[in-house]
Amino acid sequence: MKKALYGLKQAPITWYNCIDTYHIKIAFCRSRDEPTLYTKTHEDKILIVCLYVDDLLYISNMMLGDFKTEIKTDFDMTDVAVMKYFLGIEIH
Image (cartoon, rainbow, N blue to C red; front, top):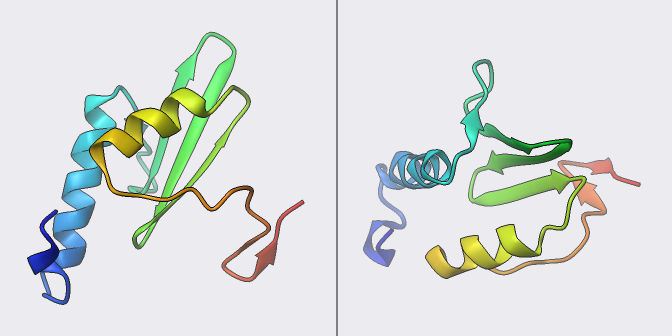
C-alpha cells in the first residue's frame, strides 16, 4: 500500500483488501463468521492470524519463523515479540 493512502477514507479498506488477498494467496482460510480471522492447517499444526486495524496477532503450535520471514518480505513490518497485553486483556 502506498504511503500516500494514509489519512484517506479509503486507507482502511485498501489495507484490508491487500492483506486479505495476501492471506488467501498463501493458502489461509478466512473465517466465515469473522472476516479478519485466518487459519492455516498442516497435519496436526495450525496457524491462526487475527487482523486488528493495522496489527497482526498470530498464534501457532508450530515454528513461526517461516511465516514471519515470508510476510516480512512482502510487507514492511516489525515483530514486537511475545504478546503480553491485547485490547486490555493480559495474556499468559
